[in-house]
Image 1 (tube, rainbow, N blue to C red):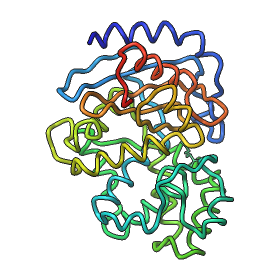
Image 2 (image 1 turned 180 degrees about the horizontal axis):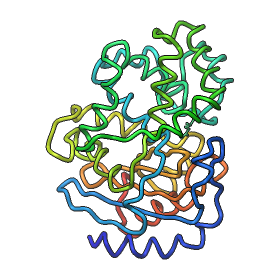
Image 3 (image 1 turned 120 degrees about the horizontal axis):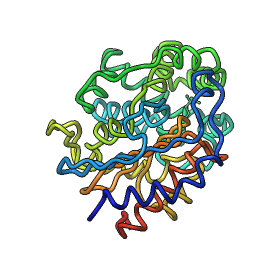
Length: 300
Ligand code: GLN
């Protein structure tokens, strides 16, 4: 497969979309990101890396980072994780409150904000706060950077996330101090990485739990299960459309990044900051759709 040629064709074909989306604006440093940018990096499980565009430029990974506390919670607690959080698609926005009330404080899945707060809480109950950045750094092979201005902005504007945390607490589904869990959440969202770095950090999901440097980060079974939850829940209320158009497990973030996994073959990361109405990268989704169309390989 000539991945390099495929990526170069994709970059040309998504160009008309780059001006169309909307950059998120709830935090000033995110609102300042110029709209018309695109980068993509694909890393095969045997370590070959293919890139196009701004693949080395760091951006705010936001909800993509929710993969880390889910992985850690599963490592630390096994199947007990699913007593505190569901694994069904939510069909609603990532920061919706209404479902949580109706479902008695059990978030639908670990990728909506309430679910990520629970996996962080589970992680913090069994490991020190530093374990989150340590796992992320180990998977990447370098220290992950938190953008302080973004983390502070998240903390200042994160009223819905605070509401979700206290709501969870009222149902006794948050054991740590709500502010401690929220601080960990805001920092996690403010992690800044490039497509090349994301493709490396999440290569364990394509390679049966084995990280880019050969370290075993999860069991093969856990990696398979994380991919399954990504496929059904990774892009919020767009999961059905993603399965239909892209056909890969994927996790998006409002910074405009998306990580997708073709198990046994590659991890790909794409970035374009213009979002669609559901908070997923407009050109990023099209790029992934083109990738599985041009290579004629998807999980289906
Ligand atoms: N920081 C954002 C929030 O909590 C992350 C959301 C996202 O990337 N979908 O609202």
